[in-house]
Amino acid sequence: MVQETPRHRSVRERLAGRTYYLGQVLSDSPFTQQRPGFCDQFLTDWQAQRHITYVDPVVTTNDYHDPALLAYTRRFEGTLRRVIDFYAGLEPSQRRVDYAPPGFRIYEREFDNVPENGREVVLFADHSTTYSGFHMFRPDDNAKLIQIQSMISPATVRDGVHNQNNMAEVIRYRGYTLIVGMDDYRHPDEGVYAINLYMFGPLLGQKGGLVCRFSQNPISPADAVFLKELEAKE
Image 1 (cartoon, rainbow, N blue to C red):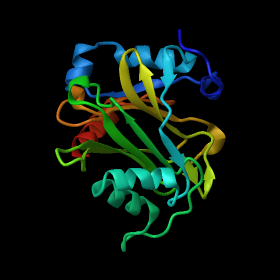
Image 2: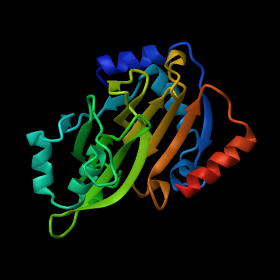
Image 3: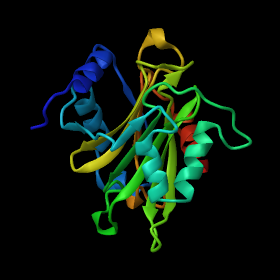
């Protein structure tokens, strides 16, 4: 049985009394085709915070110069450092961003739900008040990290302050490693508006991405088609 933590209680309280509707399923993905009802079951479990284990990162910092973060960039030279520099606003085209915790997180574990290909390194960073990002890397034969996949998720920082409604967390759920994003769409008084479930790895097809999307408003058939087309372009 999963031991309940303050995170479980906080999410359950934020979702209490709210109704969410399944807005989008990637019906052409092998994952959802082979697991009918997965999204509906996840929503039920997520609202009750059942079968949810939160995965802690190996590094959590809001300091670009944190020795623990630098240790990873020295260990894996190349792409990881460039991505971190991008988020820190140190590339010429980027402005400096003032981070509030968690800023940067690094996970090192079996992340893409394919144990046979070994462990991955995943970087999470808040880029701005608009979105945050997860980037998955895998070491090559020369021990350099190659970026395999990336995806955006809700921003957890707004105007330099941690947004209590939004979240972007890595979880274990019924044998899978997944990412959950909750977003108030910049209307904090209305609470959590949308819940998005993401996955890295090949189980969704050619790329990782969105598994399920829920919102407080039902999605019309026309909107469902539009979202489907939008997802295909990402």
